[in-house]
Amino acid sequence: MSTFSVPVVRLGPVSRHPNADTLSLTEVRGCPVVLRTGSFAEGDLAVYVPVDAVVDTTVPELAFLATDGKVSVRIRAKRLRGTFSMGLLIPAPDGAQEGDDLARRLRIAKWEEPEPVSMAGEQAKAPSLLVPTYELEAWRHYGSLLFDAGEPVIVTEKLHGTNGRFVVDAAGNLHVGSHRTWKQLDGTTVWARVAEQYGLREKLARHPGLVFYGEVYGSGVQDLTYGHGAGRLSLAFFDVFDSKTGDYLSHGVAEALLDELSLPTVPVLYRGLLDVALLSRLAEEDSVHGGIREGVVVRPVVERVSMAVRCALKVVSERYLLRKGGTEHH
Image (tube, rainbow, N blue to C red):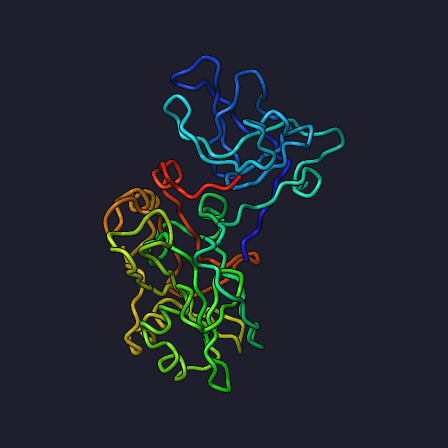
């Protein structure tokens, strides 16, 4: 489960921006942040508002973000005078201590990509199985804590579409769902359509209780269509969860299972020893399907959890975060 927080942090080194005397640079939780020169110094306490936070500009500390009368504003990555910046800093309130999470106090929530009305469909009853909402933590936050240099890893492409969950229960009933809701099998939603298109009722019935997570992508799903013409959809699986044991399958086991079922998987970009420079480069390359790549996912060869965090982390590309025409939310 992905964690979201608005932490009070103690700032590390603050340096001059290479292209602007009025701007400076620092790093928070592995993320570069551009700030106004003189607003903070090394050792100061500050509140870090991360990318994809949704802020309420009626909160006094956040009123400066109000533009065009918008009350709810999504924090997005930006390039400021040529330098990439993720999130922003505001002064820590009186009494705040390093490590405090001020998300509730400042009424800041995590942005969730909305389901377009045309895709929503009728909701269905959830299966009586353990089916977690799929989330991945960020490499920038946890990579240096969870992975060792030279560790054997698998890197896969992170496609830009809509998350899908597919599982057959012990009674042989197929359940299909989006990231957060379950859907009727009436053929009106993209999840029901791909379930029919890929024969999931029959195939997943061979492994009841295993939850198959995949990305539905193509026409009418998101702003990146990967060359799909009108009405065309595709599905690529990236994880399998055992609802009986509460564990994700190791990548190789899941890959073999999906191959046995003749089901498509997300592209594997690299198998080998961890190379952080290579990981960053792969995230910024074009998608296997053409156009901007959303990013990559890196995981160890053997599935594991460390410090209560699953060791499968996403690296989102700067080009994706800065793209024009992306999904908006206000």
